[in-house]
Amino acid sequence: MHSHTEEKSHVHEVLTQLFMQDSILNKDVIFHTKEKPHICEICEKIFIRKCSLNNHMLIHTGEKPYFCEVCKKSFSRRSHLNMHMLIHTGEKPYVCQVCQASFSHNGSLKQHMRVHTGDKPYVCVVCKKSFSQKISLNKHMLIHTREKPYMCEVCKKLFSQKTNLTTHMLIHTGEKPYVCKVCQASFTQNGALKRHMGIHTRDKPYVCEVCKNSFSRKSHLNMHMHIHTGEKPYECETCKKSFSHKCNLNIHMRIHTQEKPYVCEVCKKSFSYKCNLNIHMRIHTQEKPYVCEVCKKSFSRKSRLKNHMLIHIGKKPYMCEVCKMAFSQKIHLNRHMLIHKGENPYVCQVCQASFSQKGSLKRHMRIHTRDKPYVCEVCNKSFIQKRSLQKHMLIHTGEEPYMCEVCKKPFSDWSSFSRHVIVHTGEKPYACEVCKKSFSQNGTLKQHMRSHTGEKPYMCEVCKRSFTLKSCLKKHMLVHTREKSHKCEICEKSFAENCTLKRHRMIHTGEKPYVCELCNKSFREKAKLKQHMCSHKGEKPYVCEVCKNSFSCNSNLINHMHIHTGEKPCVCGVCKNSFSRKSCLKNHMRIHTKGTL
Image (cartoon, rainbow, N blue to C red):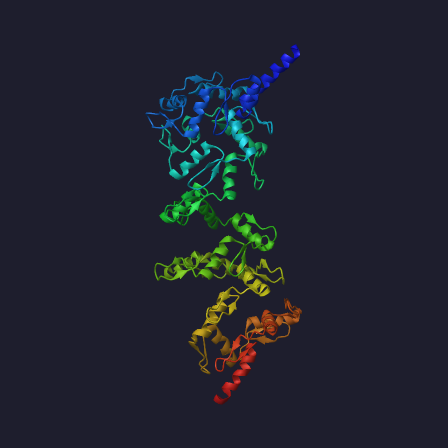
């Protein structure tokens, strides 16, 4: 009988401890203690005392009868008002005997003492993790339940705790109620103000034993220690990426949630981070606070000034391990690496053209939208890309700041200068993975790749014929406009382009400047010599996907494809008869010209 009484007493003791941890277990406590329960009819939460139930009911009714006369903030309980008043009076009567930290409430001191004692009486029943405060346990439990009952009415973001929602709302309202009494800096959170105060007090009692760096708060020291230990305890549940600090995890989560709470008041563009909004605002204000001391060029971002400085010092610290090409910026190396990997993750939804960079896709889209946002203030000419406008402006200024040290040729822009230098070095770092042909420029490789893919992104709006290059489309448009301002002085034949006239003149002069070193056969055009060289090498890299017939040059493959497609793109301007090849059209034209000879 005695042992039974002891056992009953032990059960009562255990249940009492659990009661202190979580009110969910109150029903079991009441069953054993025989106390009369007071149950909330709305949420069924149980209380031992009726006064506790009455206080709890104010949560559901929203009633807050106690007002602060200083700031007009209202509270549901008088005790909460009394605690709040200590903020205005600054009174902190409760002092820690260990570290002399002072607190406005006795409960806060008790919680603080657990830092020194290491006492963590609140244990999670799911994972057995322990906490020094009940509120910390309640917050932790939401990890297991995944409950987020508090929603922001502005951006619809969900929060597991009301305090987090309240803090979040300050982003939208712009309110910063916590003000530093020393320098008047204001903050949205009290914790941010406390951290800021460390600047003025310079009190840093917590010292890292590894590197002797000191901190004003123990939590900061704990966070700092992750640098030495390599510990990353905060893991993203979506992508499993881990972080050493919780704040970094919170920032990272915006990638998955797509949350962009910071909105530009001028153009309504939104951003995930306030720093990005501040940088963006410089577009509207035209502010460029970072100035190069060498050439006085100014920049809106410090990072862009740093990158710019590498031009003056000639430093290129980032080297490609594949082709040993060096770059001044890591982002340029990363872009370059996509050439070797063959990755083009950004795809145009209109013509399916793919790009290695998002910016390239955006610029490409302007081909379809006809958007030309960059306008010259001198002649009102508009451009698709900003760099095109910058190049154009040099026409008006006459500036040519870049000079080749080999041949002393001046250039107005860096990109043209870089391309020219490769002429002297003979470097061709961009190789085609299909036919192994190499190129000095990435843009030329991209154009070449269209010969394999068959991509023709530039379409004539008149006859719907498409072309691989924009320059080819421009040449083709002259067919419709019939502008032939370049006339041959010998035979009076006129041409739309000066380069075509130059090639035509070689017929009269007999000039063939491009000579094959193997068989001494000469050609009027460099492209014809290249095609001819394939006959010596036996190379036929262009393969028909229909019949697997191979060709030494792309133009022969294109002509061959007309057999399968039935296409006849060469149209006679006199009788509208069409032909699959240009040579066939030329033969046909003799019928019309016979009478004139």
